[in-house]
Image 1 (spheres, rainbow over the protein chains, first blue to last red):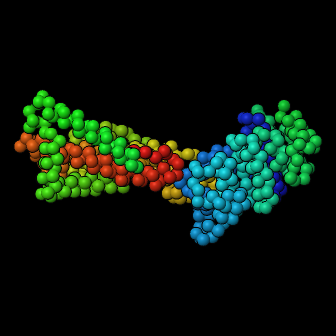
Image 2: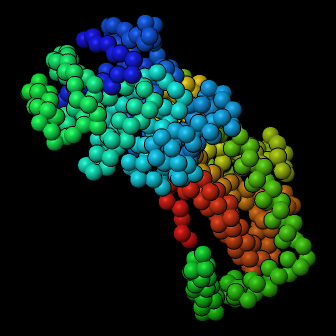
Image 3: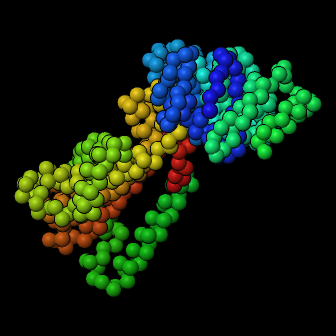
Length: 222
Length: 257
């Protein structure tokens, strides 16, 4: 399979369980080595892990429990050797971006699941990667929180202009978020379809066009 | 806190009452089962003469030096075993063979090797305490959430940063559990060592020496002091460390006693 992304594009990868969505993301992230093929960012082939990609997992437990929200967000900058004052300033800025500036000194276990995922997003953005990889980050949240989080993510994406690869099995979520959707099928993992979502944001999830896109994606998943 | 304190006082009071009833029942000669009052009097005498403080310090000193040594070796070794397969393969058989051997089995050899006195006693403590540190740290490192490692690596953590900033804090609940076990085992080692290695200092020596004169009140008093020291460490050291670290971070539920 092969696909490309434009800069600042929001790409959703949709597929049933077991079609290799997460494997794909893990390869892009550099956690797994592909048996064939390569990943290029800005024309340069990338191997292994790197600061050019930020990643957000589904599991709330991805945050470091021994660090406050602020210190979690600072981690990437700390690894880069950024000074303490600059780190604190950047962390505060990114926490504000995800509306958590009041919770900078809270430990992860003191935050709700949705808040923890927002810290994880701030943490993945803080060291300024060119691509943000997201592996079903809202799948474990309740429906209402998930809706809020999707709205917030669109705002964050618009402000930061990151390239995003977002893996999900939730069709409505993909149609709401994506510029373009890639539908994967299992055995063998191949791209079934690529659908460009030509809706303006913020998107009305109840509009006829929105539902039509959903029907189209679901059709490819059957 | 207050309720925990009254709870503790009630359980100790009850235990003392049961002992008192047993001591006064006449089942054994009073010299063999001294009453609580006798024990308290013996302890007061030891405190007044300064003997108790002297021996407590001697024993505690050996434990703390031994614990520090075994922690400095055991925790890094456990971490290396948890992170690197070859280190694990080399040390697991060795640790598995050595750790079930009671530290006291080594006393005669340690006396021959180190002579009588502090060196043998501290050596015993190190032997007793090192395996809980190694085994618990090793388990703790293996139990570190993979997501933490992945997240840290994706943010550019090098092996050193991964070790110090992720693996070590991630394994901390287990390291603290190891610290507790090591502390308990080091008391066995130090008291046994002090009895057999026949030094002239330490609570083990006091208990063993009192046997010569049938001073059961001194023996029981010293035993009670060991228990109180254990309680004090649990409350003041272990629970404080837990409350301020892994408890604060929500990695474990903190004790409420």
